[in-house]
Image (tube, rainbow, N blue to C red):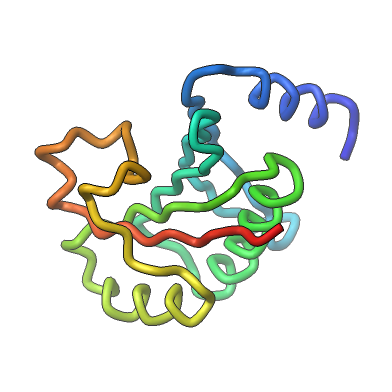
Length: 133
């Protein structure tokens, strides 16, 4: 990690309010995926909105990088996925993320994404991954 990246991470970690972070993760020099996230320092959780479309290989590698970033750089206690219920691939995504260790999270949970309005939460399925120390 270079000094500029370290400074950006330190700036995010110094915030006392939830902070939006767009992560561009490169699988190859030409292929990347963008992930819209929000880091909530109050709960030490990274909320992740799944990109609407990406190749299987790009999604697999970049998602692993995203989890490593959350654990190693942000030192998060957990990652919450926000999956739109109207996605055609939702059943496969749920199965895949369950296999990795994600568990369903109730929209009424205090760990549910605070940035999604309560009336819109029914449009999403939330899954949480607790990062072990």
